[in-house]
Image (tube, rainbow, N blue to C red; front, side):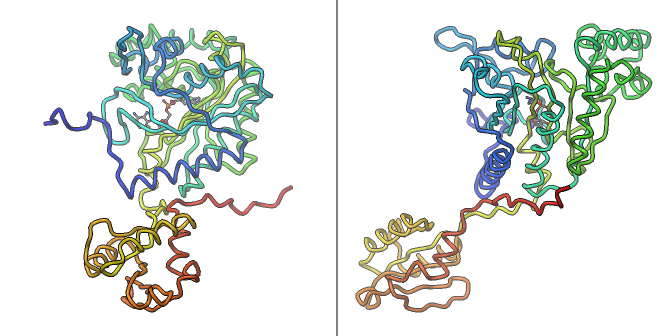
Length: 432
Ligand code: HAM
């Protein structure tokens, strides 16, 4: 039983060293995004509910899974279940349509959905997302897919499985919807209770039902209903992604759970996550900005689940906690050690000194549990302008001149160990 003082169901406490991994992924994501020209944007964690209601009439996360409350002033607010509607709201509110096109924005932060918690599904999860506004070009769709793949790869994950589809546009989709409703209505008895409702409200979602797999297998294919423009657009997206050496596969049943998509939709999984669990997903949404009372602006983007990326990476994520330099002291020299630690931090070195009034022995015992390198302050050496440098791993030590302290290898290690991987660019194939 969960007591009232435990964290809410479906949420997590992220402690070190795991928390360093999250920080590492944030830096990897933002660094790679910057290479593609995406700049970070921050929006509030809550919005007025209308922002999400406007874009998600038939969407589970908006209809049934919202964390909604009224504040003391009676305003109805919703913890954001996703970033796309919030960033589009910010785009309209701040007049970003006046910025040079395309506008490329990205974000990294918590999302809230009252889903049934299970492996890889939380009530608070973290998304890295990217949104590109102002281009209808299939190259824009390809660019965001390639960005997401580059982030996954820079984090250390190989072999993502990319599935893409096009759900058409408002010209060709109604014809398809009609055919689909006809097909499923004739098989209504065989449908699960959820799909019986979907048939009335949002028939496209019948395609990605995890229960009615057999019924949908013979359903009409979207591709047979695409208009010429949608067909050409989809072919160009596939070709552009493939030209970058990435394998993509068309999944005729991929439709995604959010209402705002037009044309391209995509989802990426990984063998370590199991079928139906997406690492990231997204697509094109040319009508969303207008539905928030903004101008008509074509847009495309994705959201990536950071907890899922962490899960898929497992031990492959090479992030280590920083290894600080321990500044120990002999009796009577606590203040000198305190000052030396601060001096080192000002030189960019991670340093710690004793805050518990411990003996030298106790200080070093504690230090050995946390790091490999220590300097000792005090005694004859200190008065002669030296410290004692100590390798806690080897148990060796030697005097070292104070003014050359920054040259000692233990200091160098504490300076380098920022604790996050730096996404090294991969070796580029020849440019043809
Ligand atoms: P989404 O597919 O709902 O799309 O979520 C994006 C990603 O967030 C998923 O692929 C998954 O990795 C992660 N995720 C979603 N829900 C959970 C959960 N309960 N627990 C853990 N991870 C989760 C969107 O949110 C769209 N805003 C994506 C987008 C951006 N489309 C266009 N631009």
